[in-house]
Amino acid sequence: MNDTNRVMQSYGRCCASPRFFDDFYATFLASSPAIREKFARTDMTAQKQLLRAGILNLVLFARGMPDTKLRALGQSHSRAQLDIHPELYDLWIDALLETIGQHDEDLQQADLQAWRAVLNKGIDVIKAAY
Ligand code: HEM
Image (cartoon, rainbow, N blue to C red; front, side, top):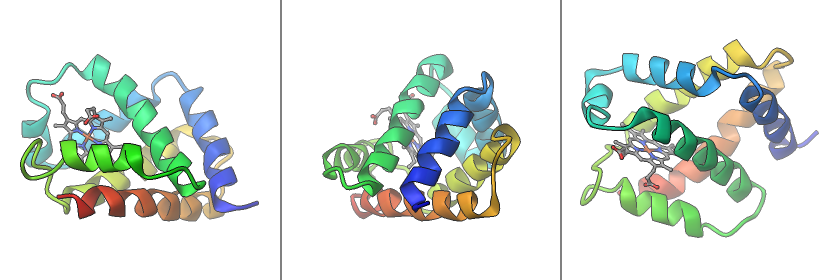
């Protein structure tokens, strides 16, 4: 199976797990004070819905969709706006892969490698706009 199909199936299993996004943000916020500071004034219920779509956009880009949505995310996360330093995406990926490991009960090693490749492809576009 190719990377994006593996990731779509794994993401479907994760989204069917009710606490997936709660656990992702708990892990991500715990990973650094710099990240907690960024989300100090955020409505996290709304943020979880935004991330659900955000991850889907990363996957769709890896499947060949144009980079329009990711370039817009790159703008909002850039130095001039949210000012999300490129190094923070490593913590984001680590937190996401850890959470996937907790919620995807059919996860195989090859799925994790596929996730990493798919995420990095889109995150490169976002970081390039920093
Ligand atoms: C807002 C997605 C990485 C911090 C958002 C929004 C989306 C999103 C969809 C809603 C607003 C918008 O569209 O710009 C993503 C995705 C990421 C990512 C897909 C990974 C590729 C990060 C990282 C940080 C971060 C690494 C570091 C702390 C924020 C903050 C907001 C935000 C602070 C605004 C929250 C508020 O409204 O108070 N993100 N994000 N994001 N993101 Fe990200």
